[in-house]
Image (cartoon, rainbow, N blue to C red; front, top):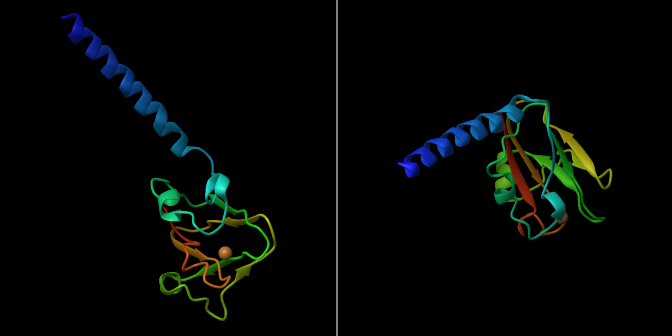
Length: 128
Ligand SMILES: [Cu+2]
């Protein structure tokens, strides 16, 4: 019966922890550095980076990158094709570029340096 009591205490603590974990999601806007410490570069799994994150309207993405890289805001088709439309906004203001996620929906970003999008330098963000 000691064992049963321990289980009940553990369950109670888990409930408290779960409730506490919910609190930050209702708090103010967040800032995410794309790729975290790896920044915006080739050979990084941005799908893995984005998965599990809950991007909200008002959050900000920060792209940190070296010279020769850039950030292009594109639509889904261009993201899939790694193609940069002629009229696409190219963000080149340097290290770092901040992008505010001003409305809900999907955002797509690629690097248009030769071949780098195809090497994985692309990220899709779903904003709720
Ligand atoms: Cu690049």
